[in-house]
Length: 90
Image (cartoon, rainbow, N blue to C red; front, side, top):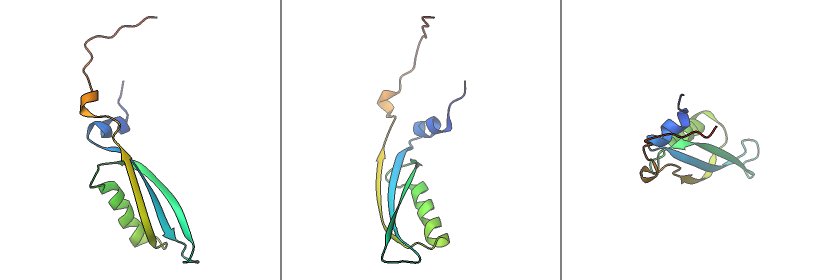
């Protein structure tokens, strides 16, 4: 049985991070557009989000207005326990 890459990241300290990015439309700068970004990242540094925002500012035309970030650590060290046995009913 293989472990999913997302679970491995959680064990390494990554947590599910969601960012709402408000940016100005290139053709209509007075209009704000919303973009939702979600990925596993490490709080509070958020290197994956910073890399994405760096890409955005250098490669895309929409000027960033604001970024709202929230994250939730799904697996905490106290919640992980070793299993000594496994029982199957059927």
